[in-house]
Length: 468
Image 1 (tube, rainbow, N blue to C red):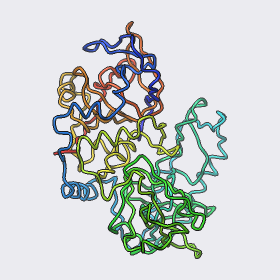
Image 2 (image 1 turned 90 degrees about the vertical axis):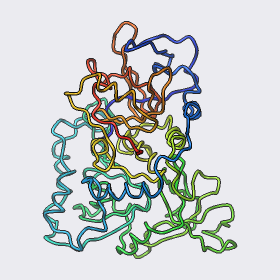
Image 3 (image 1 turned 135 degrees about the vertical axis):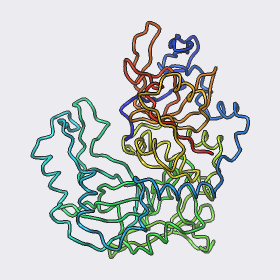
Image 4 (image 1 turned 45 degrees about the vertical axis):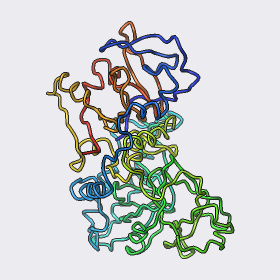
């Protein structure tokens, strides 16, 4: 889904001269004190370093109409994506149960809690009983809602964090992904305690806390998503202005690529939640009304916040600028820690330019709506290297469980930016060196090892290209 393999905080202070050398796969690369091979200059951690190498960095790779057509194709042919508007007016029991069972499956290996202690079998049984599958009706009206704030989607209706080893406290096996304010969902079921909803978003189906969702009519839900004009979040995150008058929209986190409607007709001299709007954009956000149903409220985003009037043009320069805005952000499995994981990282970057992608690496790598080259065990090293030598900025390179974004070349070596837990490579003596990163990081591609016997290149499963 995301990655069990390598990431970094690349501190500028660690990038000093006189590094060691390593990697004999075609040359030697510097190894600075950080241990991040191939990164021996602070300027390599800036988008401008890579943009200046490009012949036409501002050339539009896909126009808005072509992107809209690709997005429409994605929802038509990719089974991991779902156009909620096409669901029937009634949901049948067998379908709902199948959706739940597809995601709510307990791992077969032992699970551990945050203290490193084995999770008791009876507690896991309680978690499983919370699915309340016996309570799924034979037929129910299709219900709709909007996500109110950044919402965790989980495989079971519980906040219990579980791990597959006693010394791991990052990869929560019940954490699936997150959705963002204004995302439409279909509400398919409720947990036994009534505190969780099983929802379908356009790209996922999982459990989320009931207070993350406000239920409304299909007209309200889909009408909100289609409204214009809008502001698109182009920074890693922005937050709405603090508002004691309307806590539901106060300091609300909006992540890169989130698009929210603008209230263009709001009188310029009338306050919004007690504050003059002349220094801000007046947007509209979903809230839960006193009756418990979906409503809407104005909110403010400061004009200096990193937003745009529409999606950014899809250019190499914008791909690099957007990707580097996340550099150093903590790795977050399933969008945990208010961050993102490897597949979420590349999806959020492309979403800021209007390009929709499936959520998980396994789906992105083979999506029939995306241009991709698939590799199997029959593909020799020379075939793979031919593909590597043809990589372009913005291309996505997939290995089992992980994705990296190409940012350019230095000395003929391809470099990538990726959200990773760490990297491995051969040192001068041929021993495997492991470097923990846990962040969005810049690294070369060729030296990286999947394990002691297989390089990333020889483990590639796919290359996706988001351009003609």
